[in-house]
Image (cartoon, rainbow, N blue to C red; front, side):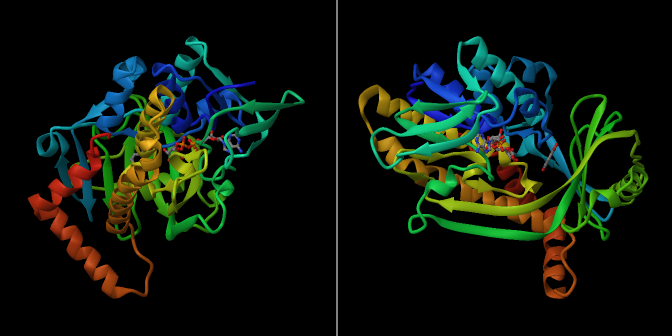
Length: 389
Ligand code: APR
Ligand code: PHB
């Protein structure tokens, strides 16, 4: 097999990249270790910045999102029962769209296959080789036979636990990481959302988030201990805790049957540079943000927008400038988003005991968010996202 760009991973990063390259007349092959049904049903976050939705619409893969996604003009931040609406549309002129990541993935897979694109699902032992030379290859196993893909460039879009980042040599790679002392228990519930707009709630018992997926499906989260076990959380306990933490005068939370629940650790991570030889990393392969800023999928889309343009300049006219600048260009946005995601995380979660100074600073910041138009503007500007490059 031969292609111009060998893409490892069929998440939002790999699929959007393959789609953008196709529109630029560049051939790619996507190698994905999981099955199509697995990646299409994996439940992840669901907030798209306006720049991300605009890109999906402009490139012809936004029809179902326009029909089924929910456009939101504001979000709510709640501190001890008092709700404060951040009017995103009024403050920034921009909006967000709530549409599950796996729906974006489904739409992109359908578009790639309809256009004759190649996605190899259930590709095992994917091993890129020769990224330092002019002719990289990617070895893999598929349906029992050993295969090899020759390419000009390898795009590492294989998420945080992928193989590509590990190809950057030790002396070249610098890692920046922060673990948080809390995790999110996420549930999908068959019940009409009790809110039209997201509610991020700080409560003495811990953070809670009410999000949504459709008129019939709610998405909810609770701050829990990272060492906690989902077996400790029967459905009744989850609802009881959500009721306490999301409570606000004159508002009620409707309960329904929980169809999915899982605990996910929270971390911040960045690797620098995001490029080595003919390997370019994009999305979670290069960076992780805690979910409080709702940025993961948007950062992945932003990276590959920069990468697709740079590859187009190179394949089109031999201009390597965009590829040389790729890492630096992406990292500017990545660090801006790291700052915002960290700020939102530390604003909204109950911090570990034993640091009363930090807790008082947090309270002061919450009061500032509740009362300052300038602070609300700052949050809105970051939440809706910077324009794509
Ligand atoms: N070989 C082939 N495919 C792999 C390998 C491998 N060794 N390792 C991982 N993959 C695949 C995964 O199965 C997954 O489908 O790479 C894909 C990576 O996709 P994501 O994890 O969705 O990452 P990305 O495309 O960067 O999108 C970032 O995903 O985790 C969320 O919150 C995050 O919203 C953000 C988004
Ligand atoms: C979600 O709907 O899954 C969601 C929304 C907002 C977040 C994180 C996750 O900050």
